[in-house]
Image (cartoon, rainbow, N blue to C red; front, side):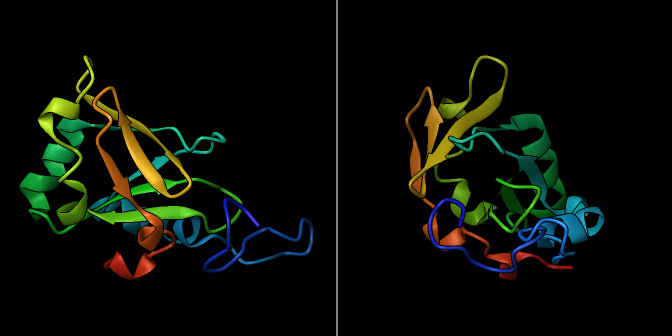
Length: 133
């Protein structure tokens, strides 16, 4: 179990027994074309998104893409947040001095610093249904 109740497929969970490849790892090439994916494997699920890259996705897809915070390379533990939902917290005033949104996820609460904008993300945990492949 990782960060609460496990969802989705476990991957490599039984070390050495084969296991199923995590959904994101198994589809990374296709996913990266349409969604902004960041690995966030620290215990506090630290992540950053560059505003210029988000703006590129907005120009190409409007609101129809996801911000993905991938918390594990070994099992399914990712937050798949549709940009149409995430944009309410990923605002201009929440950017850091380098033009990034920086934050953590603890207890299914995404919090950006230094703005303290927050979003409850429990329903987006392993929500692979939001991907279009």
